[in-house]
Length: 433
Image: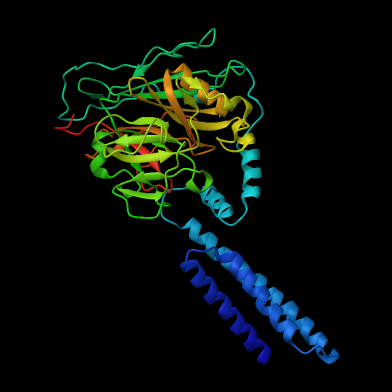
């Protein structure tokens, strides 16, 4: 009876400890296991060592170990369920991966991702239809926008295409979404890898005079944010597109700043997408090409620049610098995305399957970007959805269209709060365009 009471007391102490530790923001699972082992170990060691008590001590120690494992399992389950039920849009697989990485299982997840998300070098053959961009995108013109033509900006012709280029390759196709009387976005595709000519990089060019970019933190980023980690109904009539941001901040040296806060410090030398209150967005190396000014409203960093001065960083060829993650990730044929800027300040988003870091950089060079940075990679992460008002729907009822059909995430991603941060592209509202 005394042994049972002692066991119950120890379990209660362990559970209370786990709750307190979790409230303090520390990892609960190692704490629970360690507390269990130490508690039962201490009892076993301090018990009399006389022979007649040895059998009882062994039995008690075995029971203690079993209880410890049960408590650890309960704590793990409790923690895992917390990840699966946390606010924000994310698949079960993504939430499971996050839980594992946050509980000291990076090596296991890395091995799984290396197996699941990378394939052998793509065969040189026909491009799959699902990899080509959805060029027949229909965006309605927002009411109240000016119809004056203004000085039209257009994407520059794409140079250095692979011989025997495909129909439509390198030709910028405008959407029907307009501001100031001209299209605000164009789409095309290129094949950046001359060795694997079935690899496609789809691209979208955004008019810097006709669009505005907003950085939206996700639900996993602590704090209350103006857009609530999703696209509010009030913003949807002017919504053009939304696309993914970069790596998780715990996996990169850099940080971010937005809405007057800097939750993760900015780091000099990191590639940074910088948004201004007045004027176009910019991309550059933080502290040199782009800096903090009174006009900066948001900064999002991710690794080092892929492209600078219109050329691919030479370090990408050797992968020795380690500036773009682990070497095996750089050479991996996988889903990748990135963002670049042209000499006339237009942003160019690029994404595709079976891209390496080098082929992604080559795509930006072909598309005329003077600077470019990688965004997110793997599976469902690369996402760009165009949005248009749903026929017959309400003012905020929109329909999404993927940049290319093979993109894994749903076409309505970012309309509801998302766990990951992202960027929204809008046209200036009535009276501002």
